[in-house]
Amino acid sequence: MQIIDAIENYREMLSSLTELYLSSVSNRMNEVMKVLTIIATIFIPLTFVAGIYGMNFANMPELSWRWGYPVALIVMALTGVVMAGWFKYKRWW
Image 1 (cartoon, rainbow, N blue to C red):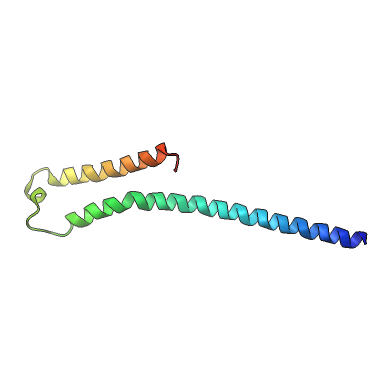
Image 2: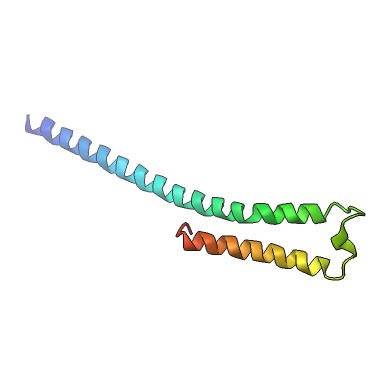
């Protein structure tokens, strides 16, 4: 009887330890997914702006403007920095 009780206790402890391990793995995966989502969210608007400027339209006023390219780069950089700062402020990152 004592051996059966000991085996049952060991089985319950093993089950609890397995659940604890799976929970910690799941929490780690959630942290990784959060970081990847934040990175993707920062790069989506930058990709959009770069895609618009890469289409070679002839009638874009910014293309004939002397400061068009630097302003586009500055806007892209500011967008990334502001979004990263916002995520840092909200303590998501």
